[in-house]
Amino acid sequence: MKILFSGGGTLGPVVPLLAIAEIYKKHDPQTEFMWVGTEFGPEKELVAQYQIPFFTIISGKLRRYISLWNFFDIIKIIVGFFQSLFLLWQAKPDLLVTAGGFVSVPLHFAAFALGIPTWVHQQDFEAGLANRLMSYPARKITTALRETQKYFKEEKTEWIGNPVRDLSVANINESRKKFNIPDGAPVILAMGGGTGSVRINQLVIEALSAWPRNYHVIHLVGRERPCELQENAAKVFPNYHVYQFLKEEIKDAYAIADVVITRAGFATLTELVALGKPAILLPMSHTHQEVNAKLLADYQAAVVMDERMADGLKLARTVVDLIAYPETRQYLGARLRVVLPPAKPAKIIEIINNIYSK
Image (cartoon, rainbow, N blue to C red; front, side):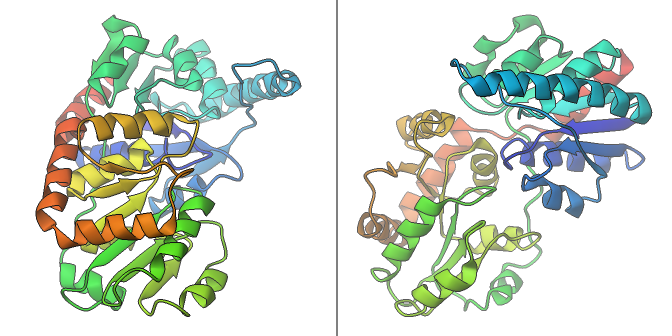
């Protein structure tokens, strides 16, 4: 079997697809994978870690308001459609799978034209325009949340939870050694998603001076230059570990983290669920992340802060409170599992086999 995945621009629609690839590869090691993504997105490097061939097509983003850019983007989508026809004709995949992203739209309509079955997975609480468009030709639609099924045709939609990668580590002490963090030291993991977050970076730097000196901070800053942040942070906080991104070591960072500061994209949230990690969420303003975060706040499954109202001192105090009360951290982790149960590997295998056999 050959499965083609599509998605990119951010890592949100990428991570669950990698989880699907990981799960099905264990089931059938002979399965071949391909990936179509964006030219300048962060997904290419992550996909390369899984040794999956990567291709790009031209695509555009449709907006839900009148804009001259929509005209140019429609032209891009048309070009991408014909690129997709050629790519699919050459590759001849048995199945096309996406979790969103406008780069997937022309590809999925081209697959429909060629009779290639498609599977669309919806992560967020509200369905985006790309997934709504792709749902029409899709053979199968799955959702991470039960409530999201209402956006799609009932007869081909199923709630399964969100696929999650294997993030287990063999030895947590070895994970601490990789970051030179002693046993028993509280660890804060701060990250801003696939492309990083300038606002989270600012708040973490502001918070450093208010945190006890036995804390250790692992800070993934994205596309900002770590050397500049490191130079500023070192003046006020000795245990500051800064990186643009982490590859395989992200498993170790997750494993040793006592508290995670992050955005509210569903891919990251699902990984926190799988590990039972308490989270402080700073959703990106005026996006679907605010809806995701509100859902978790309503269920008391995470601490949510408005990035527009937050400051470094407030963030610092919130972290200190969570570190001081392990029972609160355990409660948050347990509530996350209730609200966002991960997809079962057996269900993912069943869906792929059912689509392939028809």
